[in-house]
Length: 195
Image (cartoon, helix red, strand yellow):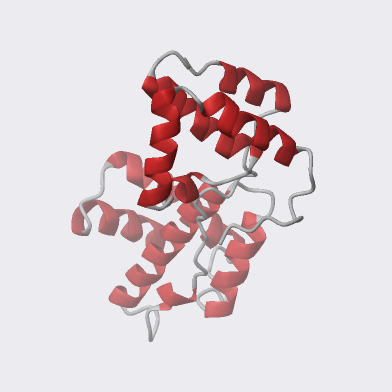
């Protein structure tokens, strides 16, 4: 077992050209795998290099661990499986038997603003300038109507021209604020469609 482990580290260092830090990351994962699949005399168990054994090892060791830790372990095990195949210890490359670990973007629960924070944000728009009035109108659309940023961007040019005319004349307060306030008090489903 120690011989395989040493050869693997040499393979990473010499053949793959990995830095010492990478060896320090990969090494413990492979040492753990070899230790958990060796007999009391130090020899490897006959099923140590079976696809199901490798998969089960990853699944067992990933319980309670972060996705980053599990991903690193999977990368190390794939590298080790490829090394075993190149060395002739396995008839086929078992790297494909190591499950991939999903990495979802934006997997955290989205944050939101409290009503007080929304009001403070809306009040922060400087309505004495055209840009400030535009920001104010956009914030109202986001907060009161629940429009998404992409929906505001996709407003038809005709609607943008009308909105621009209101903003330039300073009538955003009368023409947008009051209807938006009234709408925000009604259930969202009554007579409103985003299409």
